[in-house]
Image (cartoon, rainbow, N blue to C red):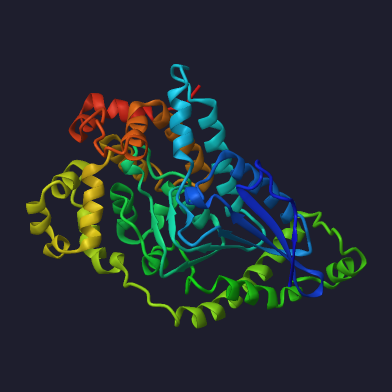
Length: 416
C-alpha cells in the first residue's frame, strides 16, 4: 500500500491530517489523523469543519471504499471539545441572552460532523484507544466500526464542568443496558474496553499496539468484490477520480462495504485481542444494583443515596470498596448540580427521539449552558485556576424546587 498526502500541513490545517492509502485494484482508503497531541486531540471548530468537508468529498468517490480515523500519540483518541476556547469566548462576550458566535459555530460544526458520520454510506473505522471523552465519544459513537483497546478510557465527564453529556451523548446513553447510561451521565464514570463492548459503544477490541496490523488487514481485504461490473469498468477507464452519482449507488454498495469491514475486523480482533490483557467490565459487575439505583425514585432519591456513604453501603455493600464506583461517586459529589438536573431531564426527554431530534435539542441546551454561569465556573475551577473548588450557582435541592425546575427548563427553550 502507498500513501498520498492530500494536503501539506500548515499552521491552519495541521490540527487534522488527511491521507489517501492506495490499495489493490485501483482502490483507496481514507485516513484521518487528529493531530493535537499536546491537547489530547481536543476538537476545534476548524477540525470539525475540515473533517466534514473531506468526508463529503470522499463519500462521492467510487474508488474510496472506507475511512479510518485515528489520533496522534497513544494517550488519547480525543479528550473532548476545546473547552478552553469556549470559556475564553464566553469571558469576552457581552451579548445578553445570546450565545457567543464561537460557541454557536463550534457546536453547529461538531454536531453536523457527528450526524454526517452516523449517516455515512461507507465504513468509518475508528481506533478508540486511550482517553475518549466528550466530543471524542461523539466521534466514537458516530462511527460504523469502533475498535477499543486495553488502554481505552471512555467517559462523559461533563458533570465536572457545568455542561452535560452532549455530542450525541443524549442519544447513545439511552442505548446502554439497564439505565447504566443514566448513571454514567450523572457520575462521569469511565468505561473500559469490555464496558464499551457491553454498552454498544464499541464493536471490536484489539491490542493498542496493533493499529498498523489493523490497517494492513483492511488494505488486504477484498473491497473490489463490492463493486458491480459496470463500476469495475469505470475504474479501469478513469482511475484518477470516479464519482458515485446516485443515491441508489450509495445504498446498494453500503451493505457490501459494511459486510467486508465487519468480516475483516472480526478476524483481526480475534487475533489481536488475544495478545493483550483486558480488565473485566465494571458495568457488568454492577449492572443490577445500578439499575435499582436509577429506578429508586426521582433524582432527589438517587442523590440521597449517592451523597451518603452510609446510604450507599446500605443500598449495595459491594459499592463501598470498589475503586471504579468510588471514583464515580467522587465525580458526582464534586459535580455541578445544574448539570445533574439537566442530564436527568434530558434522559427522560430523549427516550423516544430520533438522532436528528436529539441533536436539535442538544444544540439549544449546550448554548444555554455556555450562557449560564456554571459552565464558566466549572472550567475555571478545573482547567484555568485548577483550584478544584467550584462555587456552583445552585444546590440540587434548589434545582428541584419550583423555581429551580423553571430554570432547568429554560435550558431546553429554543434560542432566538
